[in-house]
Length: 94
Image (tube, rainbow, N blue to C red):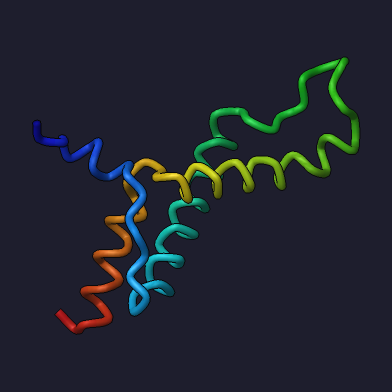
């Protein structure tokens, strides 16, 4: 049974010690992208009259960022792998 391209991109890859900083940068970049998408989707916005008030508004961005980081670190949507390959090619000069 063959794993499809989409499924393969969601499987966390064992880090290559030589490429670890590049992979970490790629995951951080994907997390930043995901955080912007989650904000655009309305995650972290006040819930009206019964929201958490000023405290909720202050910490909502931290919550969104942490959730985006968690998504990216657990396989994300496949962007980190694409970013990693592009960074690796740039570093190799190809």
